[in-house]
Image 1 (tube, rainbow, N blue to C red):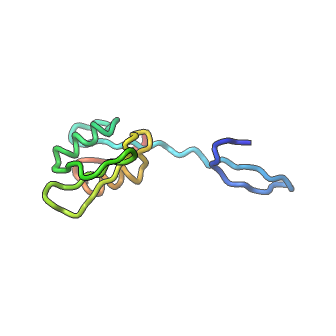
Image 2: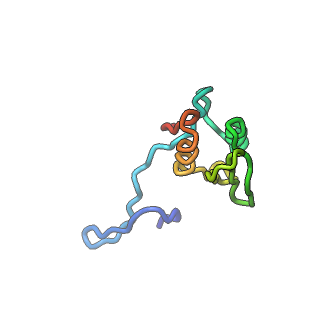
Image 3: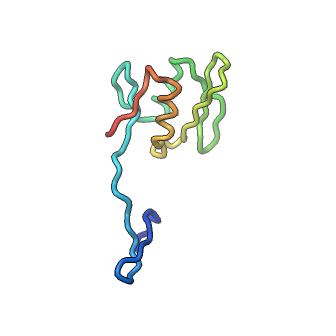
Length: 105
């Protein structure tokens, strides 16, 4: 049996099987002014800092940033960059449309 836990159990010809989801393309966050792929929380924080974002809250698992101008927007990213998902990336893009984009790796 698969130890990954991902997939869907289906019955086929009276036999129960675990079907793995199709491989999805990996996404990367790109800082568009430099056409640079963001590869770490530190690099993302540095780029966001230049756009007026600063640390608001952090713990072992996440870092939250907010705009220095007092806006209500927050960006929450995992401290472990390997855990950064497309939803985190699109949140960054949505709040900084002219500076970031998400593309297939």
